[in-house]
Amino acid sequence: MNEGLFITFEGGEGSGKTTIINKLVPLLEEKGISVLTSREPGGVRIAEEIRNIILNPDNKEMCYETEALLFAASRMQHLKEKVIPALNDGKIVICDRYLDSSLVYQGYCRGLGFEKVMSANAFACEYMPNVTFFIDVTPEVGLSRLKGRNTKIDRLDKESLDFHQRVYDGYLKLCDMYPNRVIRIDGNRDVDSIVSDILERINKIM
Ligand code: TYD
Image (cartoon, rainbow, N blue to C red; front, side):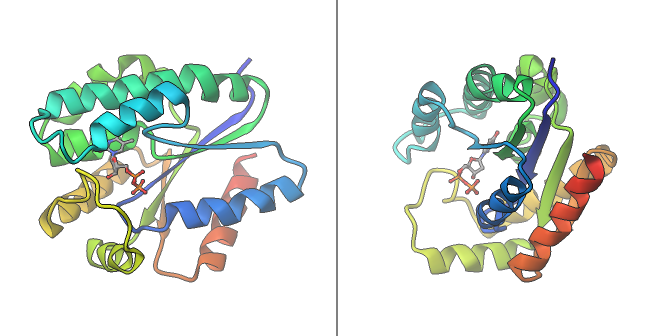
């Protein structure tokens, strides 16, 4: 089974992942490819409920380990309920964030370490993406885009520019750790160029 293609998108806040995915999907569908899109944390009811707990600004006392375990729990539910069945149906699954976000945010930025985060995610580690696109935008550019959006601030967005810089550094480490899986995409170009670049790379993989 598992004949589909599992593609994930990663990057800091304001990197443009969601916009890119929204433009990419219709182009794949035009070619007759069946695509399922989702996001983490969330994507299915139970995982969305866990998301609300994680991101709730009132949950100030949440320790980093709990945060990592909740992300892992939401990930597993989402995988079993949505991602794996779609892959088994031969679909392309495009997910906005996955395990790499935990490695970067909880492992690197929160200081838990990659190994501990990997072991908290042991179940999910069996289902690694075929390819991961890291949208490379500096933290300054990402944060300036966010300020223009005027969206609700969640518990994690409240962190400082320093935190966002660490997120960026964490992603660069990840690119070094998984050079065969993680593809760095220059996110400073116009969206159409980024999307056609990604589309070309997906075509090659398929
Ligand atoms: P979201 O509003 O979905 O952010 P974005 O649009 O940037 O993807 O919020 C998700 C937040 O959760 C984001 O700050 C990244 C963080 N996160 C982790 O810290 N660990 C994880 O494993 C995942 C999936 C997300």
